[in-house]
Image (cartoon, rainbow, N blue to C red; front, side):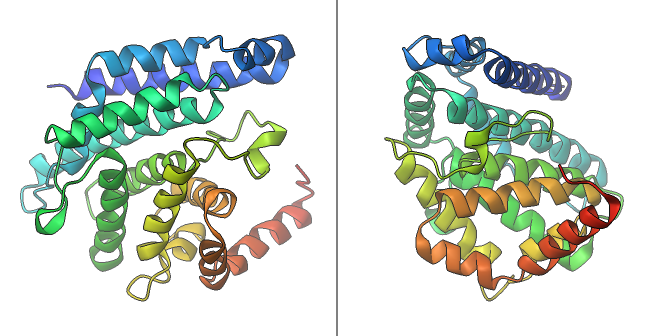
Length: 275
């Protein structure tokens, strides 16, 4: 019953984020205003979402078990998770673009409060918050896709949404591939959120480039999880390199992703797609 509402919220938040990025790219005066501590329209929307207890709600949806043996229930649960992950992706993206620093502190306070209040639990009794919940969902979706494929379930859509959410949690900036800024491709300046992003990068690498699923990220880059997951996977890889510690850089380099990335660049060069 709440699926339609979540999908509308997801669309509104994503469009507001994109519009804010477009304004910042076209109008330097807006960027200066943000640097002076003036929040943007996207930040105002994020604060409104946090005031409406969206963090614990997203955490509950993300941690809800998928009943794969009942297809009708599984489809509904997966679509709810898709909408929730897209909202999470936009929320963390807004934080990444907020030069005022207001959004990041409020978001992580809400996430920590939701975890303390029982927002969700991880495996074996460990408490799980929204960020670890999204990372765990990406892991479980990847494992299920590797073993059983998508079948008649919208798992490729869930894989894409999880990659977007986890990419934003790890500090990825770009979204949708339409609005770019020079800072999107540079190493970000350290701030009070750097350690949280670094921890997320380490947690992602623990399973994406681990012994049990070493081919997960390269497989995503070649379209094994659906064509719509290729760019989100590339975005996540960029975030891991930008925000992860040096041992993460080594894991990413040894994971095998350089081969599909080289093929992507080679094909683009052959087609004349320089930008």
